[in-house]
Length: 220
Length: 187
Image (cartoon, rainbow over all chains, first blue to last red; front, side, top):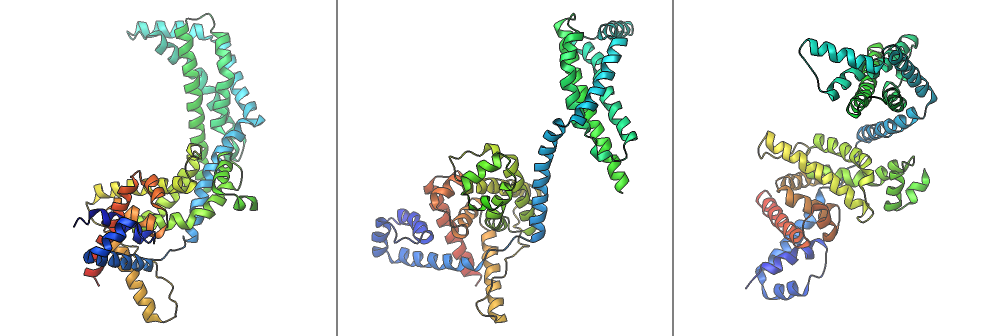
């Protein structure tokens, strides 16, 4: 007698407490060994109830919700930061520093000087790399200087949102780059844009790290 | 806050996707016991069960936008928890091949009487069951836990585990026979 199809249905009969499918019923009436097996499985199923449910510990609830709330607050605070006038005011200050610097030493002059200097020392760079190298300090230094100045001027570093200032700075500077570098080659403009985004975001991350480090040292 | 507790799972999930305050906490309250016990039984040890429990809810929040109402919320939640358990088991098998973690044992069940002897017996049976379940291969253990302890129908277990319903039935049959044999041997 082939017991295999009946065995598959036994699991259903035991688990879902059904009267079992017709195939199984018929088979069980003719096969004492499967009947005994089905009965044993039912007993095992009942025995498993001994392993009862447990309540999650309160400290686990607390720790889990703290983690999730930190994720929720992190997201909300990022949006709130970008919606804050204070962040935009500081980003605008950093952008003003960058614009003034680019008026005194325009991107075009920097590119020429830097390209010549590198060629003289035997390291000629392709246009994209050269413009990236030149654009980077214009985007990296101003937001970092502004955040560091705020750190010195304000007692509570926690309230300074370095990352958000870096992001807002990028948004202000991108249109300016097109305005200030419109006469450059596309490749050069692309390099400066890339360095502006990278430099400002890196400055934001670095200043955020410095702020956290400072807050932790003060707390310690 | 109270409004969330009256909502069914799917609208609640939509509220979480829309970042409405209090919605996530309501989902947490609804599923904390079920997911905790599923993970605890699957992993067999308290420490990694707690880590996975936290990670499950964190992932539910982070990936809330990936939930699609085609599937039941409970299926989605169990799938996340199950995948994290399997990842941990995989990592563990690399670290120490084959040895089952049984440090947790089982929660001591409440006894109908306050008789210390029957409490002890119940605790002993629970520990034997926990030990036997921990020895099952993960593919059978997950099916057994979802069916026996979570009370899920085979169709939903199939959706969570990515198996066919026939494969779920076979895995459950194998798990039950293995448990029966183990429990009979260790009576």
